[in-house]
Amino acid sequence: MCGNMHGMLKSMIRGTAEKRLNLARIRELKQAVGIFMTLHGGSGTNDVDLREAIRSGMTVVHINTELRVVWRKALEQSLLKDETEVVPYKLLAEPLRAVESVP
Image (cartoon, rainbow, N blue to C red):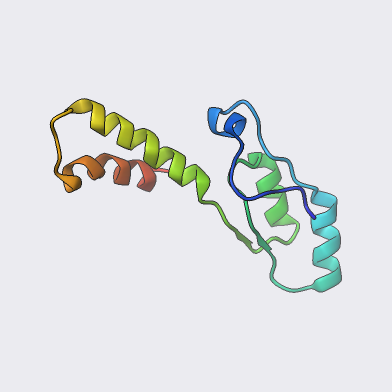
């Protein structure tokens, strides 16, 4: 175990907490197996830990919840702009732009 979990706690969504990784364990695993490694549940993880995990041998990092949070917040804003709007492509344009802008 490297110290991560799938999804994010409410405190992570609010931005008041971050996941931390067991970076020493990632280095040990990489040295032991010597193959590609994937970090599942990367959403909400401390940025410094993510960068160090990659330097330590993590090949792929899966994130999804952070994208979903950005999408939902943008959708909420889109719905508030015009409470009578019912056309999906108009309502979903802002959430799509928001997701595309995530670094």
